[in-house]
Length: 458
Ligand code: TYD
Ligand code: MG
Image (cartoon, rainbow, N blue to C red):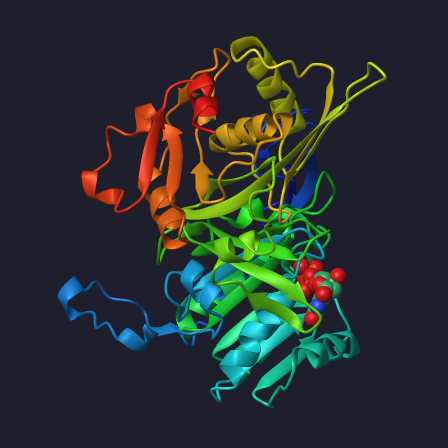
């Protein structure tokens, strides 16, 4: 059979997996340049024969005959992870955890596996990246481990497959998918064909044996390693672990979830002894804030469906040299320059010869346009050296004419401000009309149309 089918080579986009019979300079699907790489495709024999013994050939059945149990979702013991997964780990599901190298993927999954093994359930951690000693070193920082967690340093797919079928653990972690290698595919580990083959086989194991498989995938900038994006459509759930390497915050986000919403985010902090959950991010981000300092205001920006309250700080200082400096940390500095130009033109504030430094405290990146109004008010407050009352939250997008434009998710933002005890909200007038009257409670809400109106409110 195999002799009849000739080996052929095709070109795969290493970014999105687009397949083409000839080389192309730009991928027509994701528009990446120079991402097409030639790979030999051998008709795969192994994937067809996977776990045949375990496969009870499925028969059509009515929905009513399928039994559901509440225990189908296994808790990882990490609340933030469980929430992002949609309430827990679904048995027999496949979860891809992607993220930059060094962000904490291995740590997160090792912690989750430790919690599961603590319930006397077998788990297997397959590492193709680190030696057993390295993993042990990491594990020692995280605390106690029992013998239900087994480590396997292996990159050969068929070996991993055998061991999983033999030992039947509850959950398996593959760290990382880019290191796995199958003999039946001739391209190197990390190529689109290898990554697809490995995922296909693991997927069948997951579904037929009811074993949950977590796959770690590095997201790399242009490089030879296949981006995990190729896998997104194959797996049940795709989580991305993000953060800025310089500070301790990490955000876990679901971009696809067959078992829950993709709106939830989980917030973590990296400590000496692993990742800690941050259950109350707003509170956390606002801790350490000075009351009534000029140039400071709190804004509300949305992370998924979760509102986060952030402090914006501005420092406006006279510049004697004629080359004013503009610096922004945690937000886009071009946006800050634009907002300052709008303030100068529409609100008559002479800012062009002043230095401006903007900082979003806490190291979170706030790029949502809804932070505009907060930035404007912080700048004005520092410029006039007058503090804004510390129980004020401001959000809204600012347009070039100085108008304050409507933003989304207003109710969530208001509720978050209320929850943390803020008293006054400045928000776009245009967003007010869709609000129910009971949202405000004892908050005073001011609908703002232009930045001049907002500045009068200070
Ligand atoms: P790691 O989980 O290895 O990242 P990834 O698997 O995504 O590449 O974690 C990487 C960083 O986290 C590493 O630079 C060290 C740091 N770290 C801590 O700060 N505290 C800890 O307890 C652990 C285990 C790691
Ligand atoms: Mg790792």
